[in-house]
Figure 1 (tube, rainbow, N blue to C red):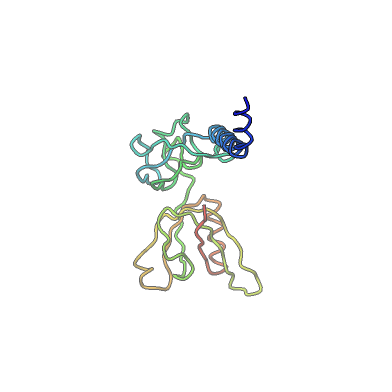
Figure 2: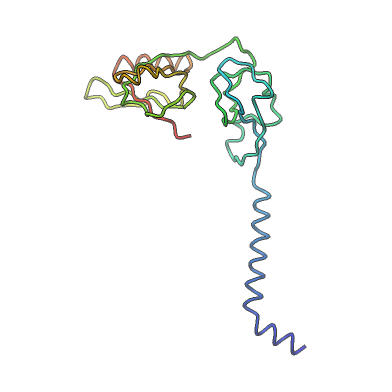
Length: 196
C-alpha cells in the first residue's frame, strides 16, 4: 500500500497529464464523429448547359456543410436524368439551381458583352462565376455592382490576344440580362471573379 502511495506521489503530475490527454482525445473523437456530414453530388465530367445528366458524370462525396446543405443536391435527390441549366465543371457540387426537370425550358440567356482586356482577370475561364461592375461614363456617378455570380459561357481568346475589347458571353436570366445591357450602355464593364 505504501508503495502505491509513494508511486502516486512521485508520478502524480505525469498521471494527470496522461489522463488529461486521453480525455481530450476522447472529446475530440466525439466532436469529429458528430459533425454534420452530407453525401452530395459532385461533377466528375463537364456537363454542358442544357445536357441531360448521366450517372457517369457524377459521384457522391462526403462534405461538411452546416447551413448551406439545403442549397445542394444530396444522395436522396434524383439528379440523374435531369438537365443542367449552366455549364457544370469537374469538381462542382450540384446546387439546387443548377438542374431542371425540363431540358427544353431554359430561363437563361447567353449574353455577349464587350470587356476591355484590362477589365477582367487574365486567367478567367469558361465556367467561372463573376461579379459584373459598371464604371459610368458620367464621372459624377460612382461605379456600382450590376449583378453577382453570373457564369462565363465563352471567351473569345483571339480578341483577348489582340488587346482592346474581349468578347465574353455570360449566362444570365432574362431579367439580369436586361440589367446588364442597360449598364453596358451607361459605361465600362468590369468583371471580377467570384471568390466562392
